[in-house]
Image (cartoon, rainbow, N blue to C red; front, side, top):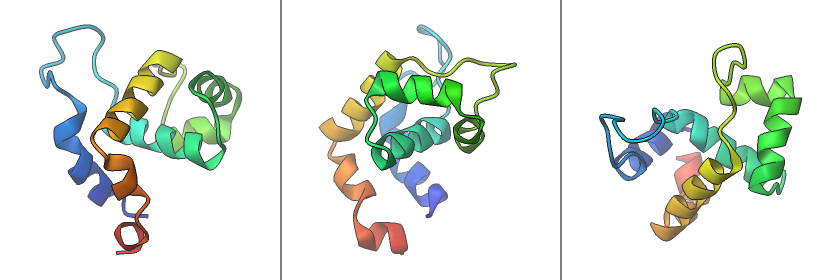
Length: 102
């Protein structure tokens, strides 16, 4: 999997306020993308994904969440990220075999 390629593609769509001055500080795009993949691989709803990351050290390691420093993004944040990907047709791009294997 080519994480750098995904991150370059999604970067301009992810954070509309790059200064992070509204609301909570933005969660890293890499973490959000990895959580999206976990959600898709295991067919989890957003709340189930949030709970699974809290419950599994392996998933926390994969998505790089350290509970001593931060909390897992809540289900609403995960939902908004997935909807952003879908509204901009980025989900189709993510799952293109040519894109993943290139």
